[in-house]
Image 1: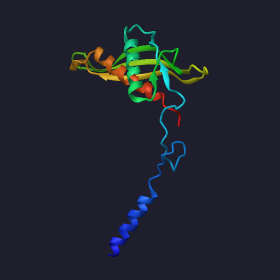
Image 2: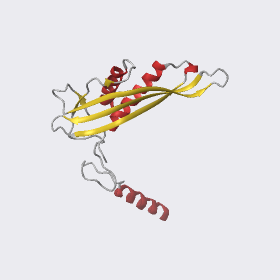
Image 3: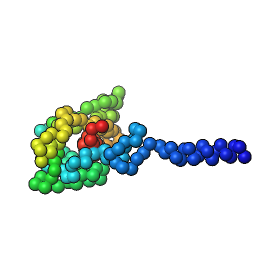
Image 4: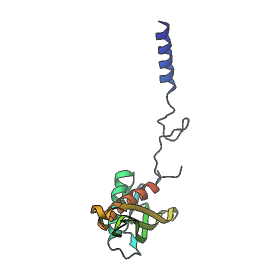
Length: 175
């Protein structure tokens, strides 16, 4: 009986104390908050086609399309034309490189390579002209294995998808 009473007291203390969360939004309770990871003052983002200073053709179109898809899937922002957008996200691909990591010892054929895309990124508030985010030499590295049938197209697609997700994650508000 005494053991049961201790269990009931412990359970009620646990339930009444909670775990520090609050639903009010802006008032933190303990170390937890319910606010969004993204800026609440921005509702729409314009994403013009990224520019490309490298000779790799078409990657700017694929990257722009992937960023738009990631924005709409993983952020509260809506993509809009520049005339109606709160902000604009502009990017310039500065280089696309392929580096060999490992070669076959006998034939010298590359077994593992890296596909590396580097870009400059600027996110600007069109209402105030303020730069919200600026990243220079933002880089995404993707490994691929030519001896397993993975070509540069496969590596390019993977790199574009990873880079687009990383770009959207960069748009999260500062903590």
